Length: 111
Image (cartoon, rainbow, N blue to C red; front, side, top):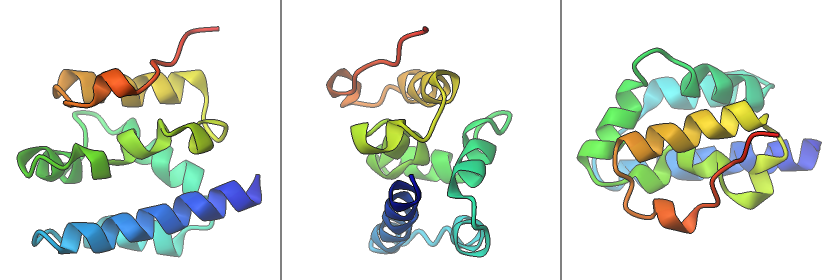
């Protein structure tokens, strides 16, 4: 499980670098990821933030929801780290914002 958490953290760092390419520097996100050993707790804090995060809004405005925490945790290799509720919350936020590739993501089902 620790190797998957490390892979997720690395993925978030790659995402930060990708965001910089279109002029967005999510410094608070980077600080949270780098300074906290529990990447799953950080992720949950972001996906459950009331009203979403400003970072998600920025990614939406730039048509880059593919870089969102919500999208990343729905990738099959990362789903094992999260509860069905976590995954459903992420999926629902992407659906709410009309993520164009939502059909390619398997919707998390309730147990």
